[in-house]
Image (cartoon, rainbow, N blue to C red; front, side, top):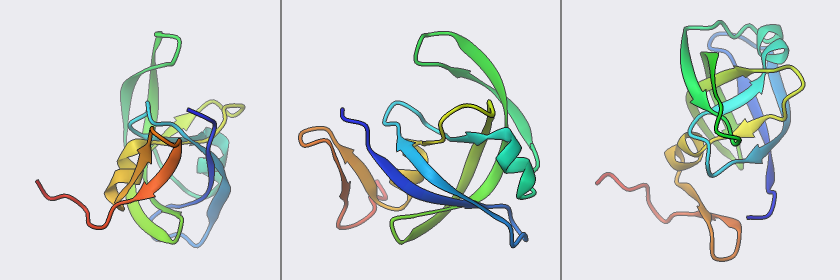
Length: 119
């Protein structure tokens, strides 16, 4: 798949501070990831830790927090991984699918579903 980026805004609950950047759409990632320093600046607090498998197959444990995620005119809420400060931000499939957007592998684009499946 070609590299696809989308402008994403993250916001902690109850905060007016926001983090906005171009996030890489990662169809292989479940959760969204942003630089830890940026998350802390906007008031996101870690609420847990989880083991994640990197693209190279290594397993790394990261803290995660909960945020409002806005992109492509849609807003959802979900987990965000406190990634390394130098890491590229990633938008995972959970955020995409929760607003009815999927990665279309045939033409390597984002596709808006006519309705969000409940089944």
